[in-house]
Each structure stands twice: as structure tokens, then as C-alpha cells.
Length: 159
Image 1 (cartoon, one colour):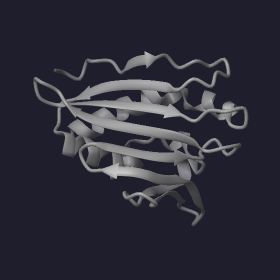
Image 2 (cartoon, one colour):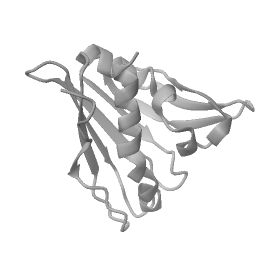
Image 3 (cartoon, one colour):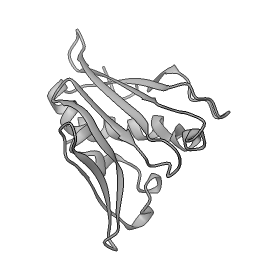
């Protein structure tokens, strides 16, 4: 298993204002525990600053990784932006949270699962759902998931 594997679109991102879930999966050549830690605790390292409210002024993204915990973006100017709430967190297995980054309508939902691969490594599957009439405009902004997940893979495998 090498770094050349593409992020697979189980359901390709659809820029037409659809409300269908965005489903992606990728393989990382690290353990489930490492893959989970890199996703959750490394979120501020691999997430694109351009895909945050702070942009180039991003300081960090804090994740309180338990049900009811918050995900908060911190700008260097002291501003805090609430991304959402952790709804499920089982280290090495799954991580789910609401996401309000589109700044409009209802929060969407991101579910990530981590499964052992037979040849070693981990399959990471991401489903971004919860799209409705109120937040559908924010869905087009999340078509950057394949880029984000490639950054995540590089971070997970090289730390």
C-alpha cells in the first residue's frame, strides 16, 4: 500500500445543490489508533486554513474528543468560531460531530470510521450528511473533502 492511492468517492461530490451525503474513503498505512489520533488531535494540522473562518489568521483548532465536547477554531486575533459538537468518539473506531462551518441553516454531520485492513493499515470512511434546504448552500463549500483527506493521509503517515 503506497501513497499513490486516491481518495475513493463512494458517492461523488455533487456541486448542483444536492442534499445527498458526501461519502469518501481512503486507506492510510498506520494503525487505527494512529489514524484516529491524527484525524482528531491533528485536525488543526491537516485542515486547510483557507477552509476555515480565520483563513491565514488561523491559530489552532481545538477538539474536545468526547460526546458533548466542542470543536472550536481559534484565530490569532483571539476570535473563536464554534465548528460544532462531538456526538460520538471511540478512539481507534469512530468519531462523529456536527459541523456549522457553512455559517447558515442547520448543522451538518460528519461521521468517520476506522477499520483494520487485512494487509495492515486502516480504511478511513467519511460520511458528511445532514444537508437540508437550510444549509444546502454550504454543501458546495465541502467539495474540498478529497483535498483535505489527502492532507490528512500525509499527516497521519508522516508523523
